[in-house]
Structure formats: structure tokens, C-alpha cells
Image (cartoon, rainbow, N blue to C red; front, top):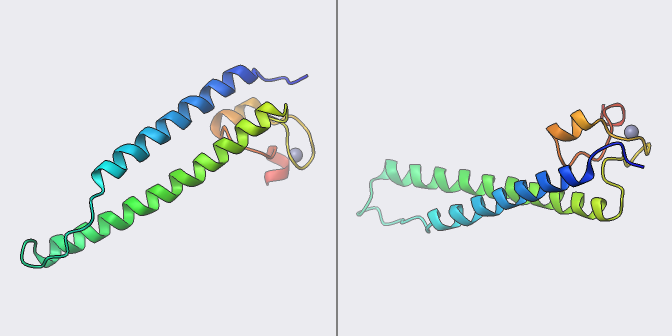
Length: 111
Ligand SMILES: [Zn+2]
């Protein structure tokens, strides 16, 4: 028996997944190809645009990585493994799971 309210964590994971999907969708909308025409925009604003594009790309990959971890957490939920440490099999403290919904290790094993 799991000591945690699995349904509660599933709902939190679902909410977080929705949030990430919405963020990616709006980011995609905002991220138009950078206009490289020097005549239409100055050199500085071109650098700004490239910098913003790089930042958006980094955010995208962070979101993608988190989504992968969330999908893995759903798989563990389905298998009844969610909330248990993958190393020692002990229950992960709910406090720890609340901080990181996708935590796979207890505090002792993660340290
Ligand atoms: Zn452990």
C-alpha cells in the first residue's frame, strides 16, 4: 500500500503537463523565424532577436525534458511504482514529491 494520495499526485502531474503543453504552444506561436535582413532591423536588434531565439530554444528543451519526466511518472503511476524510490524501493516522502512531482529517488538515495 502506498502512503501517498496517488490520485492527488496524478491530478498535479496532469495539471503540470497541460501547463507545459500550453506554454510550448504559445512559445511556438511567438517564435517566428528571425528576420536576418540587416536593412529592416538594426544590428543590435538582430542580436537581441537571436539571443531571444536561443533563450526560447533553451526553454523549449527544458520543457521537453520535463514532459519526458512527467510521462515517465505517469508510467510509474500506472504500474503502481509512483512514489517509491527506484534505488531502494522505500516510499519517497510526500513533501519531496510535492517539490518535484517526477522525483524517482528518496532523499537518501538522491544525495
Ligand atoms: Zn532510496
